Amino acid sequence: MTAWRADLLSDTLTQPTPAMRAAMGAAVVGDDVFGEDPTVRRLEEQVASRLGHEAGLFTPTGSMANQLALRLHVRPGEEMLCDALAHVVRAELGAAAVFSGISSRTWSAPRGLLDPADPLALVQTGVGPYQVCTALVVVENTHNFGGGTVQPLWAIRQVRAATRGLGVAMHLDGARLWNAHVATGVGLAEMGSHFDTVSVCLSKGLGAPVGSVLVGSQAAIDEARVWRKRYGGGMRQVGILAAAGLYALDKHVDRLAEDHARARRAAVAFAEACPASVEPAMVETNIVMLATGATGWTAAEFVAASGQQGVRAYAAAPGAVRLVWHLDVDDAATAYAIDVLTALLRERPR
Ligand SMILES: Cc1ncc(COP(=O)(O)O)c(C=O)c1O
Image (cartoon, rainbow, N blue to C red; front, side, top):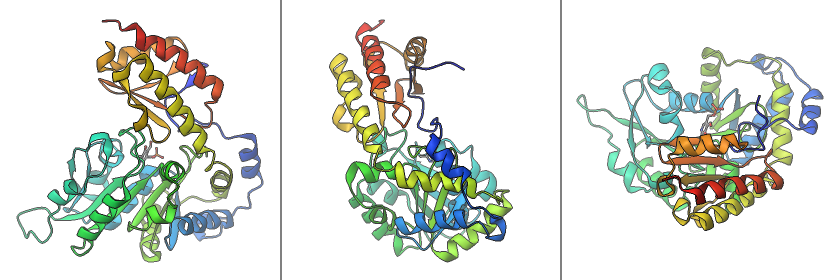
């Protein structure tokens, strides 16, 4: 395994801290398929109440939480709408179609940001036997490939108001909703309550080794619990993992501000080295998307060159490099990454 001096590949890489491991070791557990794991119950209740929903369901992954939500809201042959870079259509390997017979239509959104006109131009209900009916709009907040952008609440409210009367549901992929909450100070319930269901991840910025929670009405979560078991996601003494999530909710939410500050500090340095590579004011949370087009590097070349000096990054597109700050990237690693990456940005190979 390479010992990276700054590993900015993803916020999923974090190692559980010693205190988190101790909390996991001390967890009281039971068989969760029989509803007998008190630690899982506590996690589900806590996340649901923080997000302003009735009930929650612990899932192994964010993808499963999303796919359970899609399954609940969309019948086979109906469609969901989302932006073209949303995780549900870009990175869940066609699961909506494979498992639930769902078709998808997308809009393109600069920086992933929701413009109500985009989904509302696509929504079609009651279109009879010839066309596909829309059953769901999915919003991602923060938006991963948009560069960690925070969705405007006014836009969410507007889509909700327009779709509610049509019987179109809304699901929030809130894998990094914690980051949006910390960056804006807007309450989690305020951001989550406009949606029928919300999925949140414990294994990204919060630093738990595994786990997500899907929240919604009691009826929706009861149904999702059945589908989770059917998908093979019924877990037994899994309080040992839920304990990591509970620990993270207690200790690792507010500290996300440190990740945001480091990402912004790096973006300022990158913009000084190459102004066209990034606009620091647009870095709202823990993700920096570097546009390599103006630097003379392709994203793949840039990532290879930075990797040779111990800074791991991700080529998100031919002209875009993604850098993600997290629990295991401290000030020293950030300073090192800034040195290496600004030198590359100044180098301009062609
Ligand atoms: C926005 C978003 N949603 C969902 C997921 C899925 O999470 P998991 O990897 O736990 O399936 C990810 C993973 O990176 C993500 O970035």
